[in-house]
Length: 223
Image 1 (tube, rainbow, N blue to C red):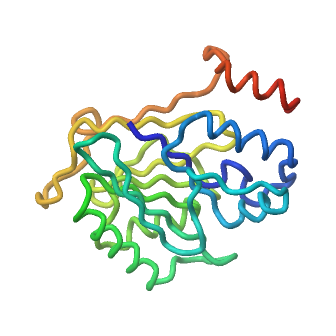
Image 2 (cartoon, rainbow, N blue to C red):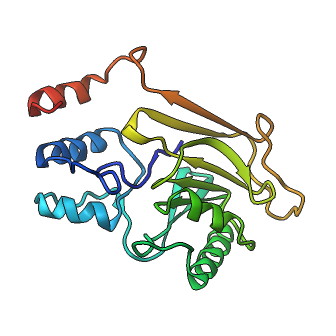
């Protein structure tokens, strides 16, 4: 099992009211308790963290360049994770050179791993352009940023499952890989309930609070 946290969890993009230092400090400690395998923190968020005097944690990744990571959910398998860099303010289309870099990075990770996951802060419309650009696409695209949330759309001629986070942190997406993708087979496609399953969990009152998180929240006096 891998636990991945996408961009803009610490500071919502273009937030009208940025979080306080106390809130950021609480979230940083809480995310460590969640034992994430990788937390994608954008330069936009890092600027707020630095201003608040919070040092980066070992599970935090993300920068202004394309990043490749290899994670091991178990001893027998490896998963490639590609972190897409933020685009310039006001960009209406991903640069062609960056799209090529993404495709090349997907191919490089695919040669080493069983599954390639891309995490994006680009927003709905620009992620859609990536998926329609052709070439090698990631097996999973986990998107954030401006635009609607998605429980799970199968895109790129069936090759990519696209999930987008919902705002306010009130849900968690779970992806079950029922069979590894066969990249040697040109006819391979994701099919719901056959080789993949997506579930969205709304964090309602039916879920009991984690005791460690609740204790941390009470100790720090945050809401």
